[in-house]
Length: 474
Image (cartoon, rainbow, N blue to C red; front, side, top):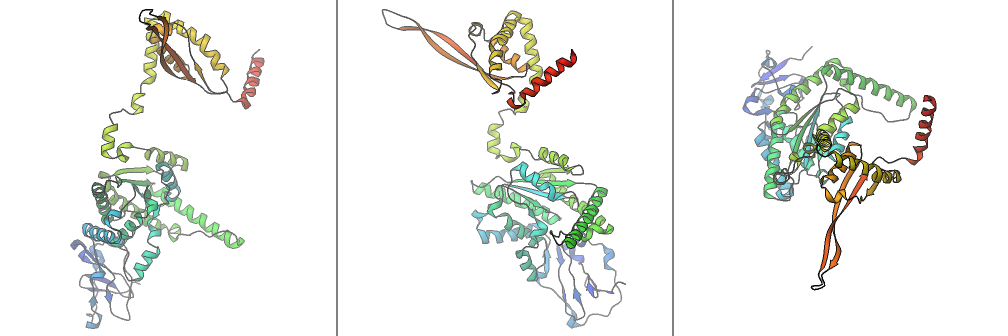
């Protein structure tokens, strides 16, 4: 049976274990931890979970109750009112940071990946893949762990609730640690609308710091959401609960091993559904950052290796996101390698057909030279996988396209070849009157050819298999 509730000045209370909420949300304030001085009343305040901060008018049904005497009237102070305006919250937090560290020392990470995920999506499992792909060596900042840190515990012991203001203050102070300078993954932030807006304000402040201090990094924010549907989420959480329970039973029976956390929600259908509903609400809030930062929604419902491939593809290097605007403007004049070689195969075929059509004699001669002069050297260096060829045929001195023909033929046959041309002046005579040396210009052409080398330890197997195949066919 529910305890009777008492309504005082728009604040809903429940006697015994008091639940309360304020109708002043629209005014930008939420009353926290009101003190109702009575020895018969205990207090429980809501956290910043969305289901606690979004309250409908149905929550304010009143019941008949005598008016509270003067000794039990509601007392509030500035510390007990949480400001919900993100601009005010962020400004207050930023001023504290500047006062504590100095503006010139506010070195935030070069890259911050804001990671969210559906319950059971595998954030803990997949975070190492994200770190490895982005070259991040620091461990992720996990918000659930950060809010149980000694600093957060101290603040809670002082009577302060872990609202948006405290969460942002603790997180930003943590991000200033030197270990995170190259980059960091933040797991579980932002969640609320206030936190989302403060994330955008942080990015603006970091850009402002870069303008004022040239040695500061260009900030790079990415939002990543690991998604699985509701049925998959519930199934994974149940499986995790059973697995952890069996593990702990074995540890207790054998007296060996380490106990793992058993989450109460993993065995409760209603709580599982509620957690997924909270995730969807968080995701709806998080989507507002899509217009400001790179936003990655990754399907995490497949096998681990498949999800890993998706993460690698999503987080691979992108110069337009990571270089400063000035640097990128300079180098973008050079086309990307992928664009340059997109139609390489088709162009190679066209050139080979053109050689045969327009100059068949030269083309056939070059093919014969490759067979007689190049391939013996390839066989001689088969174990090394590369060789150098310096052809002496006069055709290479007479026709420029002879070099192109060699490169195209070798490429089509599966070799990797590059050419180098060095010009040399060869003395041919001396003018007796002026004693001037007359020289002729000679081009020395060198081809460097690479190919798949033969493995000495397995070559005999290839020979034996080849002989067996011949025997069977005969």
